[in-house]
Length: 120
Image (cartoon, rainbow, N blue to C red; front, side, top):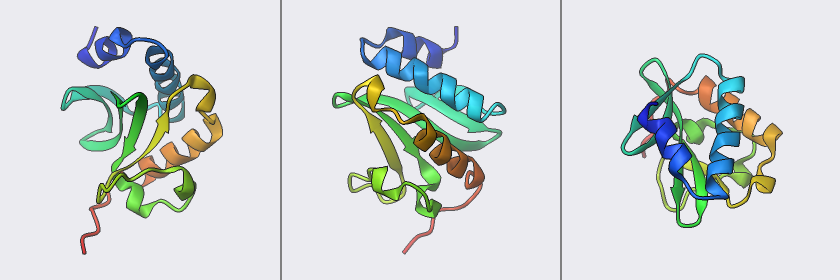
C-alpha cells in the first residue's frame, strides 16, 4: 500500500469516509492522475503537475487546488484562508459533498494544472 492510501485509511471517521469518497470522485473524473504522497498528505498529479491535495486538518477535509486563481466556476464555495494562490473545498461531513460541484472544480484544476501562478 502506498503512503497516500495509508494516510487515508488511518484517518478517524468521518474523515476516512470523506477521503474515500473524494478518492473515488477524483479518480473517476480524472482517470490519468496519480495518487502520490507529498509533504505528508495525498496529492494527485498528472505527470509533474499537481492537480489537488487531500488534507485532514482543523476538523475538516481540505481539498486544495493550486490553479484556483484561474477558476471561473464555484468561486463562492472555495476557501482561501489568506493563502495567496491555493484555494480549497472543505468538508466536515460526507453529506456536505456536492459531487457535481467537486467534479466541475476538479475539471478546472485539471485544465489549469500547467499554468503558472499570477503574481502581483
